[in-house]
Amino acid sequence: MDVYLPIANLSVNGLVIVALGALTGILSGMFGVGGGFLTTPLMIFYGIPPTVAAASAASQVTGASVSGVFAHTRSGGVDYQMGSVMVAGGIFGTGIGALLFNLLERLGQIDTVINILYVLLLGSIGGLMAKESIQTILAERSGVPLAARKRRHHPMVASLPMRWRFYRSGLYISPLAPLLLGVATGILTMLMGIGGGFILVPAMLYILGMSANVVVGTSLFQILFVTMATTMMHALTTRAVDIVLASLLLLGSVTGAQLGAQFAQKASPVRLRLVLAVIVLLVAGRMALGLGYRPGDIYTAAPL
Amino acid sequence: MRALLALVALVMLSAARDPILVPEVSQHEVDLQQGFTGTELLLFGAILTPEGSRAAQDYDIVVVLKGPTQSIVLREKEKVAGIWINAASTEFRSAPSYYAIASTRPISEIVDDKTAAIYELGLQWLQLSPIGAINPDEQARFSAGLVELNRKNGLYRQEEGGVQVSEQVLYQARIDLPSSVPIGTYTAETFAISDGRVVASASSRVEVRKLGFERAVANFAEGYGFAYGLLAVFVSVGMGWLAGRLFALI
Image 1 (cartoon, one colour):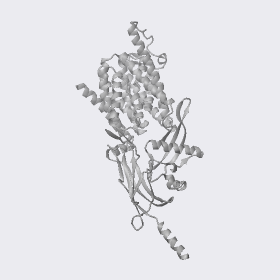
Image 2 (cartoon, chains in turn cyan, red):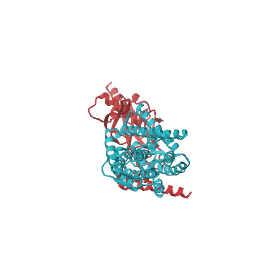
Image 3 (cartoon, chains in turn brown, orange):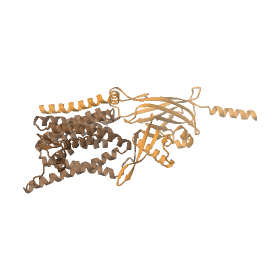
Image 4 (tube, rainbow over the protein chains, first blue to last red):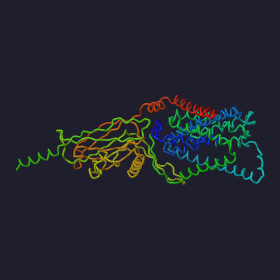
């Protein structure tokens, strides 16, 4: 099924794009991450211009997180106060991200920066997740429980001025911490076309020390609004959002997300995390190789 | 004796009388819309004497299809500290967004380098107008890099032997346009060449454009970024919500 993409200016096989969306949708339903970290590189690999890929991937993450947010809202799994602070930071972050994107594009280094960010982030987060889940699995096998974590949140968070009470998260911390976290993920969302879930969730758990039952819901809430802001920002600055491409991706990913969510209920969460860690590490490894190997095209052209 | 010379000269002159070309293109409008996966243009025509009869002489025919030129920056990757990053770059003022040339024989056998350069016959003779004071070697390296890049993407092509001439009068060449063909006004030029000299040329236009829905989307995205962004957000939220509702029913 050939589909002509009006913004990317080329024709693609629509079924491939829908399948790509479905793949990342299943991942997002299973693991609660947006799946943007897979969509963007795969689309670029398929031949879609990098800017269009990053700009259109954000709207796919929006679609995939909508049903998740509804589900978590019903079960009381969203801390709106915490979420709003992070959304505010996130929207500010997309603004900074847009400026950075523009600057890096003019310098001709946007692709390299995106690739290095992918390798660093995916590599470190994937490594952490793998380590943690393997430890848990081993502990389950041997029957010796893991030592409980001593501290709630990172000492740096406690040292920030001005404290608010976040009842649902069970925290009494400075709003600056979630705000800065929001800014950081906003920048990444704009630059990399990812939702940032795989960074947010561990950061909320281990840096902020939020209650586990509101972490996924609140991160989805933040991702939903920040990816919406990212789509708007791309529509206004890079003008690279391809609505036909996004719709195809969405078609696959919203369906996949539902399937993934049903599957996730049957599988053990620790094993799911290990699988996700392996996928994340594979993507990081592939990108690291791409940086080191001589690329197929030494030259790249961009309009002035 | 003098009269004889004059007669010979007259015969030679009339033999060298330039032919005229009557070119045509299979379609003057290429519409980019759903289902477009690239197309093939047929550039054809006739070589005639000024009186309109068959030229009855072997001419070499070269056809060139050229897209609108654009200013671009070309970057070259280099290995720095173990990773490949963009290092040197140069700018070209007039790089054609699309260029295809087809000829009856290899260009180098038809014309000399000077003529090829004047008429821009062949990928190596494109006048790209590099900017900046870089030395000729570097300039040549970058130009070759640009040609190679676009050739790989199917936007630059050179098909020597791509023109067929039948009965010394009709010529035809097929030129492929990939799905990523840029929009704009293209010129299709035909040259008749004899003894290394361009004896006739003619050109016509081909319009490559987006049509209908595709044009509306492109214009909308370009002209009304805010509303377009809202639409994209609305579509993504709507589809996510709808899928959630549908699956809740199952």
